[in-house]
Amino acid sequence: MGDDANFMTDGPLPAHVGIIMDGNGRWAVRRGLPRSEGHRAGAAAVRRVVTAAREIGLGHLTLYTFSRENWSRPVEEVSLLFGLLVDFLGRELDTLQKNDIRLHIFGENAALPLAARKALEHVLTKTRGNGSMHLNLALNYSGREEITRACKQYAAEGGRLEDLTPELLAAHLYSAGQPDPDLIIRTSGEYRTSNFLLFQSAYSEYFFTETLWPDFEAKDLYEALRGYTQRIRRFGNI
Image (cartoon, rainbow, N blue to C red):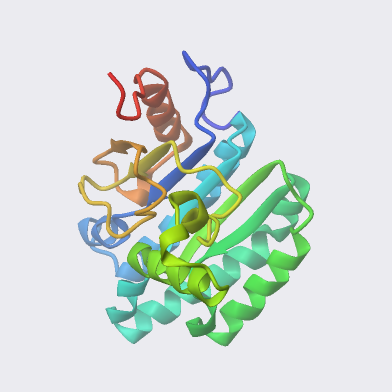
């Protein structure tokens, strides 16, 4: 099973894990390589982590793939990122099908490049019947915009402000129907939420690691999960 065939924890696994994948650029710079090589290595890390997550039975995994703010990067870099996404989807569709993994997108698809939209639509359709694991890619995503969008959708459906509850708002988020993340992992030694799943992460546990995303292995995921199972979650209670 990946790097650890005997993976065990002291308690139940989280139902939903979110990962803020950070450090591709620094990984490349430290090796004297172009940033593009860091992104390619990051894509390989995605494959490793999705495989490990499925093997140990995680039900929901959300990867922060491309934020609204990432559009400010150089055009060539943005183009490369979406090219890698299209390549990933083409290469991994059979694996997703074989492992009963359903793909979901959190974010506004309309602004994505045409090739990426078509590749996403194809995989979304093909995996719609899968249910053993839900893989969510946060693409063109912003936590604040997601909350704003949910409020607008609620109002457009005739909902009254005085009737709005957290549960009704959650039903209009991209993650509707999925559990809130129990654990959020951030790589590369940064300690920020970076506008990721702001509403859903109200009571999430966080795990921060110095490991850069391209170096993140199954064993690093297992370390985070073991740490999670040793925590006592009080949800505001004593």
